[in-house]
Amino acid sequence: MMNKRPLIQFDSVGMYFGGIKAVDDVSFSVDEGQIFGIIGPNGAGKTTIFNVLSGVYVPTKGVVYADSIPLNNLPPHKIIGTIVGRTFQNIRLFNDRTVLDNLKIAQYCKIHYGLKDVLLVTKKFKEEEERLEAEAMEVLQFLELSDKAHIIAGTLPYGAQRRVEIARALVSKPKVLLLDEPAAGMNSNEIDELNVFITKIKSDFNLTVLLVEHQMKLVMQVCDEILVLNFGKKLVIGKPEEIRNNRQVLEAYLGKAKMQEGR
Amino acid sequence: MKQTGKKVLLLCFWLLLLFVMQQTQIMSNTLKLILQYIAIYSIMVLGINIINGYLGIFSLAHAGIMAIGGYTSSLISMYLLKAPFFFPINLLLGGIVGMIFGLIVALPSFTVKGDYLAIITLGFSLLVQSLLQNIDAVGASRGLRPIPKNTNIFWVGFTLLLAIILVKRFVNSKYGRSLLAIRNDPVAAELVSVDVKHAKLVAFGLSSFLIALSGGLICHLLSYTNPGAYGYSLIIEGLIMVYLGGVGSITGSILGATIWQILVETLRFIGMWRWILGAIILISLMIFKPTGLFGNKEFSLQWLRQIMRNRKEKRAIHDE
Figure (spheres, rainbow over the protein chains, first blue to last red):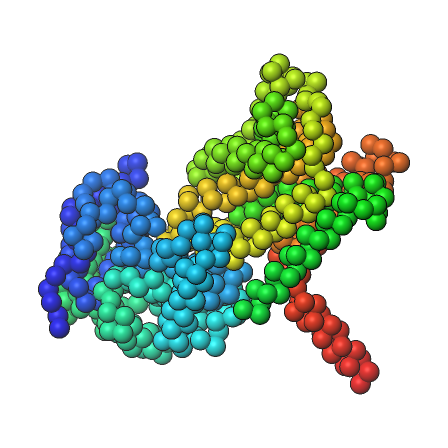
């Protein structure tokens, strides 16, 4: 089942904003079917890695490959959907649209009808609209959201909005799902549920998952491999148990506390 | 199948009604004129609403686009295709030229936002106006006359119907959905695979096409035009009608144009004070109902039924 084909490859990628090196010379690769965690203290460059991967930023140096295709200079809408689907650190749903509309908007890249089909209401237009509504409903059903399809997204409770965001990322059937702090603001029980949920959607949708997260409990339980960043640089990469006992990682996270201990 | 039959029947009825209105003296000429004004401005407001309403970009380019559409079709009618039966083609050509300029106006919207884009589009409108004022070949500030009086209630009604159908279909497609998404959160829209630039281009294209059509219609109705007609007052009038009716609503666009045109006609006796009134309406709308009378709702029988039901329920509760 586990075939070792690198799906995402970062080849000494650097992302500089003026003098600030948000990501500096980071290389790693993510195999197909993995759940890959990215951790690190605040400002370590985790979200920047996601933004580079989804085409928001063009890396200052180095190349990012997805499925052996270099992503440099591809605009986000060419990367998102076909290769990558993502969620946001602070939920960014289209708040005044219904849940179903949110999903339909995210299927933009999968719609092949043109303006002509729209204005003449051709058969192609009708068929595609029907198809994408069916597909959206299918995803909603999978995530147990089908009863909320016609509710305005902004009025949903926080947890449901998080799930709608994941549904929106999945609806275009990407190969890689980027989850940016999905456990933010969740309690211990909810994190356990999320753990099960991530593993489930990974196998159901045949995904590779990249996860940025501060909740160590979730990261250690769910990830196959973890990359630790500190000040934009790669610190270590390894299995959860290796990371847990790594001295460098402890120092990066707890450095201050140790200093205070020493005093 | 039944639905399409119904639609075709409605279409035939509408065309027949227009034809009768045009051919007979069922209504006075003044009334006919006012109806034509309402319909022409409705077309313009539908166009403006795609950009300022659905897409949520504050554009002021409509005066310039309308001037281009009006001048193009008028010049063609005056010098090239003079016969009255060429009129629809001339209108269409005006619309297409307007659309091309609309696409050019769309380009800065890729990078520029908010107030700055408003200034750029305002600059475009004023640029077109001063160009027309200074080119002798198109009559400079004297304008064009006589333009053949080809506009009649039939063509106006037909174009309005066409505009409504176009906008309705557009709004209910991936384009319409992506416009609303861009209005809501442009970054998130791009990151869920919406091709923002393409969607903006299509929106500006359709919007400008409709605005330019309305320009052609109004020129052929009045039989003259001059650059002075496409200045600040037209920009403001367009905005009043959009924000009066409803931002992002087809019904609202038509309602806004209707109310404003009726006000303009009935309040002729107060002269320039109409503009004061217009400004007051705009200010109070922005304070009390910033999304316009209709908001982003649409008029439909279902909507009407819902209101009636709510009212009945309220009464029932009251009676208890």
